[in-house]
Length: 467
Ligand code: 5AD
Ligand code: SF4
View 1 (cartoon, rainbow, N blue to C red):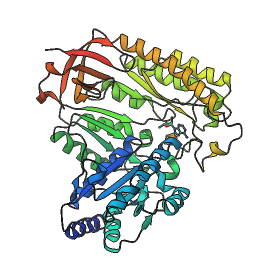
View 2: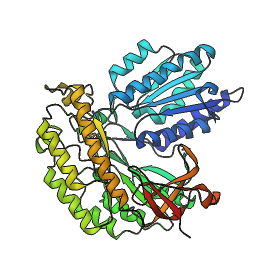
View 3: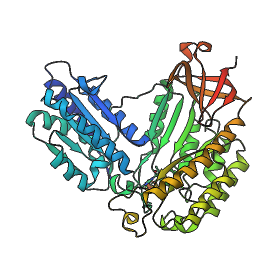
View 4: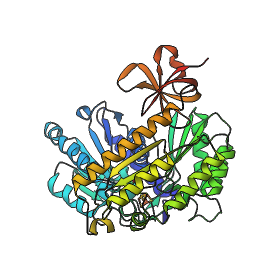
């Protein structure tokens, strides 16, 4: 793994200055992000670099001079959306030839997609893979000065670059990447191919970043990694993820710690014990199960059994009885029989997650599962998805009903989507909470408030401010 040197980063800062010097007039950038929180964190870095290069944020792509599409490859649907959005920018380019269109992220870290873009999207000027993010200023400078199309995909296993600028989306909430990449090679997943091998940031860099955020008034820190439980395995000092959480917990300030994603084969009792004794860890755990069938889990190369998973959940609930647990489920993995799917439903009924993210299996080029025989027909996958949602929506609703009457600490985020009379925030459990706007002063947005829960819906809680 390559750690990008301070000299290389300084070179990128020089390119940022050079790009800024090229500007003859005011220029604006627009970033469109698809996919997971890691991609959102990457987009904050892209935005940070754009602003350092003198670009101002554009309200919409129509008034941008630079558009960056940050893509996802986890499911085909995400790829098709990114391609369709990129396609819509063709007419903008026709109207404004000096517009620079860039495409980056996981989708374009696959050779087949690079060729697609080269061939079918001639108005895309610059393409860079996940391993080239830190070289964006240099690539953009070359593009602006030569106006030749540039395709830059790194073929190494990934790198770590510290010290690039970031433009945070929110003042009160922040993503902090602790590690990048994945070594697990679950057979359905493209991530290890597009994000490289696991590599951990130094604990001191992470702690400095968190201290800085907290000093700036940040109230929620979400530690990110494809598999946070592997944190530190590649470092010389013996700091594992539980140690890191424990160190962050000791930083002074009024903030909450969340993390994702954990892998059930690696999430251990040490981490759970540290959470339980911590003052700042949210009472929330996201632990992707994927399937309730032992055979399917083995075919997915998940390396745990339903029984082992269940034991972990039981331990979590024993030491933190009020913990909210969420999960990811895939339906229609190749060869999944009706009985095996029913085992997933049975396990969901037994565990009773607060929330799940459910996905229809999407074959990904280059992964072992895409080559497996007995792919499940779309209509069966959809029917299974409907049954899964029906069961889980009922469970989520019943779980939410248990919250009615409780007083929760809620980090207020802003206006509710779809109802300007309500404000929205997240409880410790990560559940969405809506409260009437007129009860709250604007000053309290971005801060913790205490909310009495008065009503439950399947996907949200409604409450009132508790004075
Ligand atoms: N098809 C469907 N879902 C997938 N996920 C990852 N790869 C695929 C795929 N090929 C889901 C997993 C993972 C979540 C982030 O996305 O459930 O936990
Ligand atoms: Fe994909 Fe599995 Fe790695 Fe998660 S742990 S990113 S599902 S390969």
